[in-house]
Length: 268
Image (cartoon, rainbow, N blue to C red; front, side):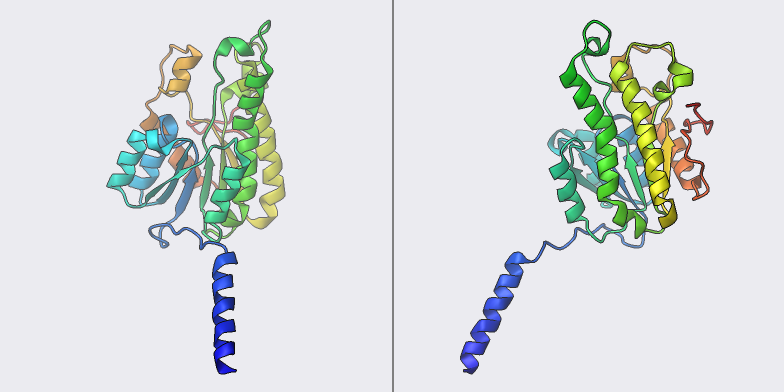
């Protein structure tokens, strides 16, 4: 009888091991604040990962194809607090998988940086509208940040700083860009993202979570080059350093309006 009980106990434990969810991933230093950052492999995203790592943060740096993220991998090799994770923000299954992996891990700042201008640009201009490109831009710039924020809201709430950031742009401002019609989908996506993050702010305010909209300014990135812009621009590191300060200064009393990298509000 005793042997049978032991065998049953072993069987139950074995079954539990099979059905039990995998343990949550762990950041390198639980005593340090943590940022989860999308689009970390280049441009402003890479500069933000570098800045937060330099400030001593745990950095969960996501990108679509980590194998090709040479500079990000180099950063992680130099700083053990930088963890690279694969994430395509348009793939809901990947979002849910990452959220399950980090279940229970406090995330002080969830920074929705990943965005796409939408190329070829000609397919988002009058006379050449392309529905497939429209859907891709909207999924990347609007639904992705909203869904990721929903998936990680418990992580943010469990942290000390409780901040969710949406990376916006002056191109989403009706006031500033009312006469521009070169980037229909991108402009629409940023205006929509602003509204989505503002609605999210209202939902989460009672839970002590600050939702903010920040713009990086004109930055020397591949996206800016693709846009055809030829004026003076910031270096990615300059933009990231200023964004870091703006995030650090955010409080629950923040009004939730879009703010440029120079600290000035962007008119809606």
